[in-house]
Image (cartoon, rainbow, N blue to C red; front, top):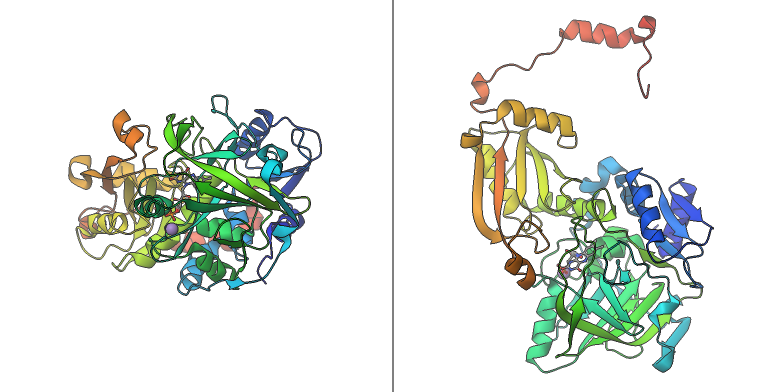
Length: 466
Ligand SMILES: Cc1cc2nc3c(=O)[nH]c(=O)nc-3n(C[C@H](O)[C@H](O)[C@H](O)COP(=O)(O)O)c2cc1C
Ligand SMILES: [Mn+2]
């Protein structure tokens, strides 16, 4: 059974020992961020702040900051996540429309529209203000009517105005350009606090034209229920905790940022579009769901990595990929390690190109290809392959001036400011060169290994974790 809403998922996390309730009052300015940082560094639980600032509403953070919690969100095992991804996303399940839902329990219009009712933290020391981090933006293609849902963090400029920093290659930017060309106002609904399938779908690298709400249905294996907004022509998930009904004026820009991004750096302040809130609807006791952004480890590293891995594995056309790890240290986006069954000499580089050539892998920067005896999730094994199987002049390829992530702080300033980010990319073929001739990996004699396994107890050696 799919989770009906955020609350059902929070119950599950709590039952699994994956959620801590913070009953002490905490300040929204900096204190929440510092608590999240410490908890993430220690690989601690998801957090539910019951008294955040002066708000009457609770704040939930970092619910999906581990593969175990991602697996709970999709009601599977961590080892099955990627296989399940392929199976479930093969067929979208389109939403159904219902006449009303819990997100309509409170409807605020006119002077009642005030974002500061909700607990919105200032996360990192140099952030330009409070930021809504898990802001799921729902928009519609003005020409085709196709829906898009994606997370773009929102800078709170004032009680009814939000800033947006969507990269030019994001789908909402394409919707916006079409609306501008038609001289129409551009409606956008932002939903906060949803069943986890919606959040996961909204950060997944699905191609333009794929409806993430139908993909959420596919991930949860049941259609979502949508209700009509009050003031704009869009439908939103009926069980969302909070819905911000917005319109983007065609000609208004506002200083936006800086913000501690998922890269671990602040990004650049710039003039960017705004969203004006026309109405807010919310549930009784609405829970604001958010994510601490910053250096790894943090939630985005996991949240984005799983869908990127799933989508790459789905679309790489070459046979022989065993596993792929979009690494945590690579912020869940920049770096991948792929293990392959090497079919013939040169196959490692081919596989690197194939990964970079998928939609899910198109923004990735560094791909390391290893043999199937290397676990791509084990950094020591990967480094061992780099140390012992790579001749850099022979095995490293650099491809210049292809699209990368605009927040990459190593790019020149003007590329980051315009968002037209051209990066070079590196493929490291860390598979054995001349595999048939390659030296043999050493290990103890097979019969002895089996005997030792069988008779381990008699040696009286206590091993960590054993
Ligand atoms: C917490 C969080 C915040 C994000 N903020 C932004 C953002 O401000 N701008 C952006 O371009 N992408 C942002 N992303 C990445 C997009 O959500 C993600 O790439 C998504 O798949 C884009 O969807 P689209 O292809 O439909 O545009 C964010 C992701 C996460 C997890
Ligand atoms: Mn999309």
